[in-house]
Length: 151
Image (cartoon, rainbow, N blue to C red; front, top):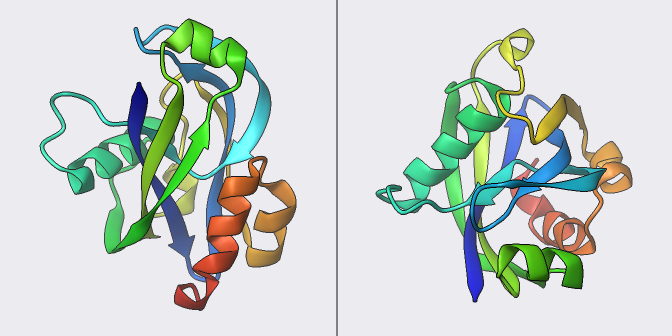
């Protein structure tokens, strides 16, 4: 089974939002502990999400505590990857397909605060630092590919 997800590259001036995930949610919404990793905000689409834009705004609110976001662009290319065996076994999902958005944060960065147990840190960092911090190669490749939209 393929897990459908949404994700956001969130820009604030010349900085980009990364979150530090310490857990992921499995198919039954039970947390699975993982080694901490830096990533863009993203998460699974829920049955009651009316559309992808509402889904990413919900995820951003859940992960950062803010709803001060403006969607700039939905990228047509999806990010796909296969889950490692341990996560596949626990979640029931073989892979994930993520629809990515470019989003601008229009609030006060001091108002950002993780709202769920998956996230323990939130930072805005430079474009160069993003490439050093991102954990997953698929996200690095995507960020490089769309970097012309980010200036």
